[in-house]
Length: 123
Image: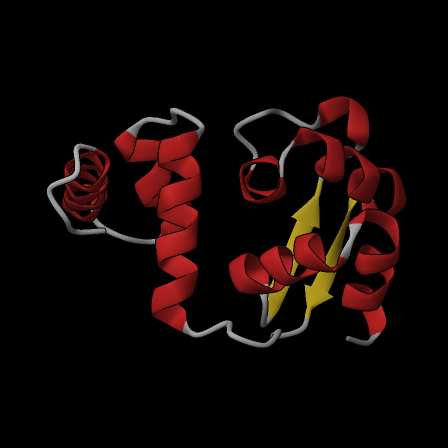
């Protein structure tokens, strides 16, 4: 990793940097000031509040071009956003906005996850 992703990896770990690349890679991403960071902000949803705070301390209040990272293909990126949102208990509407998909897609993922958790396969 180089540039911004390398700096994020140094601050919060390589896994966090890869998650950011998967969620925001290839575009300008806004990082809020630490004091304005909300639990439902895309950054906190993607990497958790602790890592999001560390990143906001460095980049907060500005936009940063996030490079594409390895494995940042569209479908795996969308799936990770949806699953992270479900895990955090966000509404289907909010998750759909974050992932750029239809709410029905979120409901389908929820159903597959529920089925997999009950031991009936899927996910």
